[in-house]
Length: 158
Image (spheres, rainbow, N blue to C red):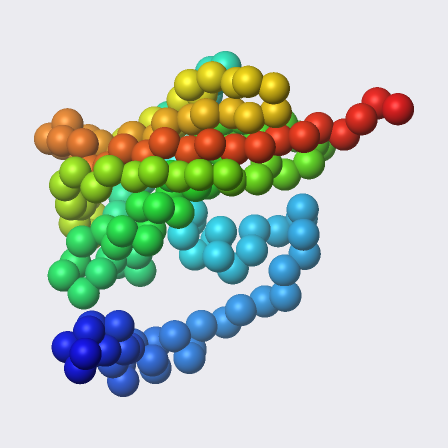
Protein backbone atom coordinates (compact mmCIF):
# COMPACT_ATOMS: atom_id res chain seq x y z
CA UNK A 1 0.00 0.00 0.00
CA UNK A 2 2.82 2.40 0.84
CA UNK A 3 4.45 1.74 -2.53
CA UNK A 4 1.20 2.59 -4.34
CA UNK A 5 0.72 5.69 -2.20
CA UNK A 6 4.26 6.81 -3.02
CA UNK A 7 3.66 6.59 -6.76
CA UNK A 8 0.58 8.81 -6.71
CA UNK A 9 1.64 11.41 -4.16
CA UNK A 10 3.14 14.58 -5.56
CA UNK A 11 6.65 15.39 -4.45
CA UNK A 12 7.37 18.69 -2.67
CA UNK A 13 8.88 20.04 -5.91
CA UNK A 14 5.82 18.99 -7.93
CA UNK A 15 3.48 20.59 -5.38
CA UNK A 16 5.43 23.85 -5.56
CA UNK A 17 5.23 23.87 -9.37
CA UNK A 18 1.46 23.35 -9.30
CA UNK A 19 0.98 26.05 -6.64
CA UNK A 20 2.63 28.59 -8.97
CA UNK A 21 0.16 28.03 -11.81
CA UNK A 22 -1.87 31.10 -12.71
CA UNK A 23 -5.44 30.00 -13.44
CA UNK A 24 -7.78 32.63 -14.90
CA UNK A 25 -11.60 32.43 -14.83
CA UNK A 26 -13.00 30.51 -17.79
CA UNK A 27 -15.35 32.25 -20.23
CA UNK A 28 -17.33 29.43 -21.92
CA UNK A 29 -17.27 29.46 -25.74
CA UNK A 30 -14.84 32.43 -25.72
CA UNK A 31 -11.65 31.03 -24.21
CA UNK A 32 -9.97 27.70 -23.81
CA UNK A 33 -10.39 26.35 -20.33
CA UNK A 34 -7.25 25.86 -18.23
CA UNK A 35 -7.55 22.16 -18.95
CA UNK A 36 -7.74 22.62 -22.74
CA UNK A 37 -4.96 25.20 -22.81
CA UNK A 38 -2.66 23.10 -20.64
CA UNK A 39 -3.04 19.98 -22.75
CA UNK A 40 -3.61 21.30 -26.27
CA UNK A 41 -1.16 24.23 -26.39
CA UNK A 42 1.42 23.58 -29.09
CA UNK A 43 -0.69 21.46 -31.44
CA UNK A 44 -0.43 22.53 -35.10
CA UNK A 45 -3.19 21.63 -37.52
CA UNK A 46 -1.56 20.34 -40.71
CA UNK A 47 -4.55 19.18 -42.75
CA UNK A 48 -8.33 19.33 -42.54
CA UNK A 49 -10.62 17.40 -44.86
CA UNK A 50 -14.14 16.12 -44.44
CA UNK A 51 -13.99 13.40 -41.77
CA UNK A 52 -10.22 13.87 -41.26
CA UNK A 53 -7.96 16.12 -39.17
CA UNK A 54 -4.16 15.70 -39.11
CA UNK A 55 -2.05 17.55 -36.52
CA UNK A 56 1.57 17.80 -35.41
CA UNK A 57 2.53 17.86 -31.78
CA UNK A 58 5.92 18.18 -30.10
CA UNK A 59 5.81 16.47 -26.68
CA UNK A 60 6.26 19.19 -24.03
CA UNK A 61 7.76 18.52 -20.58
CA UNK A 62 4.48 19.53 -18.90
CA UNK A 63 2.72 16.45 -20.31
CA UNK A 64 5.27 13.82 -19.31
CA UNK A 65 5.31 11.35 -16.47
CA UNK A 66 8.15 10.83 -13.99
CA UNK A 67 10.03 8.74 -16.56
CA UNK A 68 9.99 11.52 -19.15
CA UNK A 69 7.42 9.79 -21.38
CA UNK A 70 4.22 11.32 -22.69
CA UNK A 71 1.78 10.57 -19.86
CA UNK A 72 -1.05 8.13 -20.51
CA UNK A 73 -3.52 10.74 -19.25
CA UNK A 74 -2.23 13.23 -21.82
CA UNK A 75 -2.69 10.62 -24.54
CA UNK A 76 -6.25 9.97 -23.32
CA UNK A 77 -6.94 13.70 -23.44
CA UNK A 78 -5.62 13.96 -27.00
CA UNK A 79 -7.87 11.07 -28.04
CA UNK A 80 -10.83 12.77 -26.34
CA UNK A 81 -10.26 16.26 -27.76
CA UNK A 82 -9.11 15.30 -31.26
CA UNK A 83 -11.69 12.53 -31.58
CA UNK A 84 -14.36 15.16 -30.96
CA UNK A 85 -12.86 17.82 -33.24
CA UNK A 86 -13.39 15.70 -36.35
CA UNK A 87 -17.18 15.99 -35.89
CA UNK A 88 -17.27 19.51 -34.39
CA UNK A 89 -19.56 22.02 -36.10
CA UNK A 90 -19.39 25.74 -35.31
CA UNK A 91 -22.47 27.01 -33.51
CA UNK A 92 -23.86 23.57 -32.66
CA UNK A 93 -24.10 22.10 -29.16
CA UNK A 94 -21.11 20.33 -27.67
CA UNK A 95 -20.62 16.64 -28.39
CA UNK A 96 -20.71 14.26 -25.42
CA UNK A 97 -18.23 11.40 -25.07
CA UNK A 98 -19.92 8.04 -24.60
CA UNK A 99 -16.94 5.65 -24.65
CA UNK A 100 -13.22 5.72 -25.27
CA UNK A 101 -10.88 2.80 -25.75
CA UNK A 102 -7.14 3.36 -26.04
CA UNK A 103 -4.35 0.96 -26.92
CA UNK A 104 -1.01 2.22 -25.58
CA UNK A 105 1.49 0.65 -27.97
CA UNK A 106 4.74 2.51 -27.33
CA UNK A 107 6.11 5.62 -25.59
CA UNK A 108 6.99 9.12 -26.72
CA UNK A 109 9.69 11.21 -25.04
CA UNK A 110 10.03 14.93 -24.43
CA UNK A 111 10.58 16.81 -27.71
CA UNK A 112 9.47 13.87 -29.89
CA UNK A 113 7.46 15.15 -32.85
CA UNK A 114 4.15 13.31 -33.18
CA UNK A 115 1.60 13.11 -35.95
CA UNK A 116 -1.94 12.85 -34.62
CA UNK A 117 -4.58 11.69 -37.11
CA UNK A 118 -8.27 11.81 -36.28
CA UNK A 119 -10.81 10.17 -38.60
CA UNK A 120 -14.55 9.74 -38.57
CA UNK A 121 -15.30 6.03 -38.73
CA UNK A 122 -19.04 6.39 -39.12
CA UNK A 123 -22.33 7.68 -37.84
CA UNK A 124 -25.60 6.06 -36.82
CA UNK A 125 -28.29 8.54 -35.86
CA UNK A 126 -26.82 10.83 -33.23
CA UNK A 127 -23.86 8.55 -32.44
CA UNK A 128 -20.47 9.07 -34.09
CA UNK A 129 -17.41 6.83 -34.03
CA UNK A 130 -13.91 8.27 -34.45
CA UNK A 131 -10.38 6.93 -34.32
CA UNK A 132 -7.27 8.83 -33.25
CA UNK A 133 -3.77 7.53 -33.99
CA UNK A 134 -0.60 9.04 -32.49
CA UNK A 135 2.62 8.24 -34.39
CA UNK A 136 6.23 9.28 -33.95
CA UNK A 137 7.04 11.35 -37.05
CA UNK A 138 10.72 10.38 -37.10
CA UNK A 139 10.27 6.61 -36.76
CA UNK A 140 6.70 6.05 -37.95
CA UNK A 141 6.12 4.03 -34.76
CA UNK A 142 2.56 4.01 -33.43
CA UNK A 143 2.44 5.42 -29.89
CA UNK A 144 -1.27 4.90 -29.26
CA UNK A 145 -4.55 4.29 -31.03
CA UNK A 146 -7.87 5.34 -29.60
CA UNK A 147 -11.50 4.74 -30.49
CA UNK A 148 -13.93 7.41 -29.39
CA UNK A 149 -17.73 7.22 -29.48
CA UNK A 150 -19.64 10.49 -29.17
CA UNK A 151 -23.27 11.54 -28.93
CA UNK A 152 -24.38 14.72 -30.65
CA UNK A 153 -28.00 15.85 -30.56
CA UNK A 154 -28.27 18.97 -32.66
CA UNK A 155 -30.84 21.61 -31.79
CA UNK A 156 -34.35 21.15 -33.17
CA UNK A 157 -35.49 23.49 -35.94
CA UNK A 158 -38.92 23.74 -34.31
